[in-house]
Image 1 (tube, helix red, strand yellow):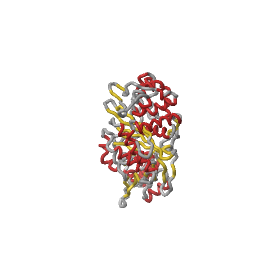
Image 2: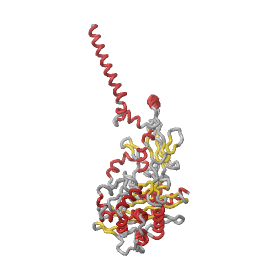
Image 3: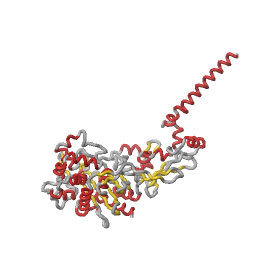
Image 4: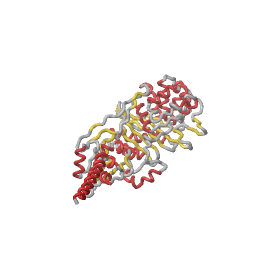
Length: 462
């Protein structure tokens, strides 16, 4: 009997040790991995109770917040303005993850960054919800709303920047989506050929077409080429593989490279770029940050050294693709006399029960072309708004500096319309904008949209 009891005791002792080791292994060694599994019910239940912090605009307007059901304690992410700035603010979903600022500041908004181990354990034991911090963006809700409304049902993007700060005042992309109904509409949004989940302002890469002319003129002026003496008597449109890239608007008179710029006419810029040369062109495109998203003018592009490659780059139809954000920075560089700002999207963060703390901008301003060259191009941009293809951007009480252009898009016979521009609201403070409208030849509409957004920004800053 005694022997049997001892055997049973040893069995239970061994079993107890095995269970203790297993619990210790999963509870300590593999704890993070176990808690991190997406199918862990405990993780899901805990996640649904997290009170994410607010995302607000520069004036404190709430763009994202958390609503908590008092009975169940379940937290729901809510976006008061639905699809306004959806691509910038992003979305938070238990099923589909996070995007935009919700993703960039996920740990801070969740409260992970400020949660000490002791506080985390205390929260778990007392069943207190985890509370996250708040994030303040550089966006201005009023300017953002104007940009969204100006695009309307038109596919495209708008970016508005403060100069010289580089703060993103608005970033609109259409088509868009409602993050409040993301779970219900995910499949249709994902499969939609118009790609509403893509932020065209930053992720969209487009042929610049004739909107590249400001950079090309700046390069020529920096190289001391005699722009004012370059007359033109030939055809104004350019032909590419049986397709025609026309002027941005029907010109009144084009007899020089200068007047070709006013009307966004491509052909006169082809011989100009031949005189600029590949080395100078590459250097200026690099200085303007246009080779950072992709650098098609480097390794494979010995074709740029050839006449055909330079000729296509001269009309913005070569290997170079740009985003609306990049072109807004180009406009900002001309507004600041050749100095390009580093873009900034987040102004400050705030821990729970704490005050706002400013975020230092990432990156530094960069030089592009000389002040004299940049100012000379800016004066031509002012003329383009007064008497050229960008006339629709004009405002009654402010000088608008702008340029309108067209670009061939894709293998099919389609066009995109561009506008870049800026205006000053004080001697050393400006607002810059870039507008991209897909599938249209109406560069005048792009200019009008740019003018309306600049008007809203001026009213907001006064």
